[in-house]
Image: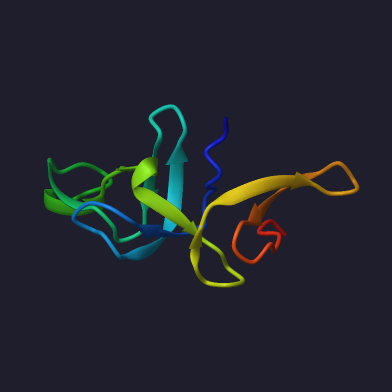
Length: 106
């Protein structure tokens, strides 16, 4: 079974300390059932000076959040929704919003 959420999708956090916040998916980790969301679940990480972080010190970055704690937001109706999949006439599989029945994939 696929995760149903892809990079650059808009999501809503439904549980945890970040509940109610919306964000954009930066990356998906299907083996760990988690994803990275822009400006959500920020942590502080102590970094040694390196080429990437010349100064070093305390860096704030996003931590992965479990996929079960988020819901996909439909771009058409702007509501959090579950998704179903259907096949188009060309045989291509697309994601469909359960609330407004609109195709989510371009």
